[in-house]
Image (cartoon, rainbow, N blue to C red):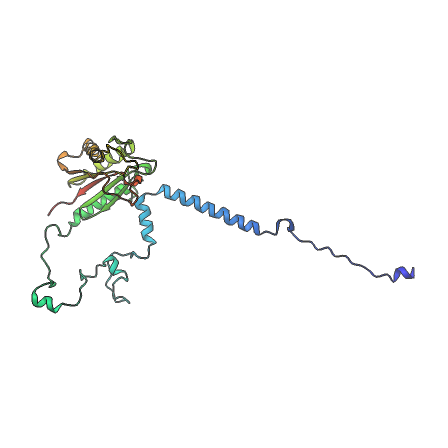
Length: 286
């Protein structure tokens, strides 16, 4: 009994490692990050498919640091005295109109290169504000900027507009897997006919003349008989007929041109985006 009472007491401690078989909970964090990234990816794909090209361009311009939010400088007394730091790139309207350099003494004595202001010609006259406002209203209705548009979402993704010195350019273009004409023909598909009918109705709100330009993408195969000129002209003619069927006065058609595959909208010559027809509501000559 005495020997057993003096025996050392041995305490056995068991070390328990929680989750040892799964190397802790780090895998859960990694899996959650993966699921979040996939959700963001599919959300991005959905947004790209649901927006028009002009809407995507507007979003890209908003986040571009080289484009000022205000196209006209305020003329304040800030650090740049009202000029944008990107004035050389964007030609901020600060009232000077031109960037003047130091005078050239030799040019002044010889009468060469003198900085003179020529009287404005008819082509360089400022656009009529009322006409610009009318064209801008048509642009907003086409792009549903005001929340109202008769075009379906499927048709609106084939349309992009831009207001230029020539007038309001309404571009109807093809997308990968979504053409606007039957392959190799001048037969308008239903989505194109819907857009042309809408443009015809909106063109009735103004009296501007109309120009139509047909463009084609470059064929990847070299054909002995490649009627790109005839086809681009025929497609422009089909759009003209669609406009007139929608109520446009034929006398307002001023120009109809087929550009074949010589004028691309994107650098890739064979891209579907280059298959397009441009309807231009021309500014009135003053």
